[in-house]
Image 1 (cartoon, one colour):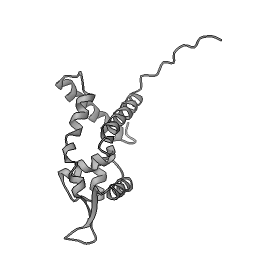
Image 2 (cartoon, rainbow, N blue to C red):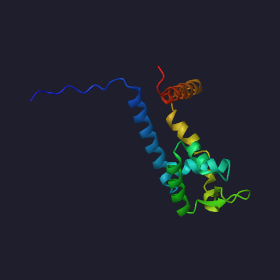
Image 3 (cartoon, rainbow, N blue to C red):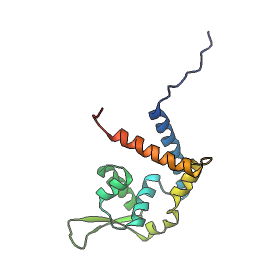
Image 4 (cartoon, rainbow, N blue to C red):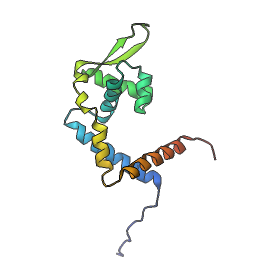
Length: 149
């Protein structure tokens, strides 16, 4: 049997971004597991630590999820005692997601993103890190344009 040559992967930005996102998500999940939180829960908690009492649509926008997915995450957080749904004082038809005392007790993790950034940006200068954020924002904007070009 002939020896196979190593498979050369194409230079595909989507692949690199996908692999990097998967690896960084796995790293975050591992770091948060010792606190009994998922990354999706931390993202929502981080929004509520900044502005308690949010609509599901606001949470969805902040977290990058669609409203049904955000609602399911909030359901699990509610079951875990991290948040509660509360009718708005001004309009009882409006339901706000609010922190519970248990949800507030995790606020010591509010700088978690900084810990993650430090790991992911290790070896990059501040200028390189700033440039990376800028370039990725442009790539993201390009990826969101549909039908142009």
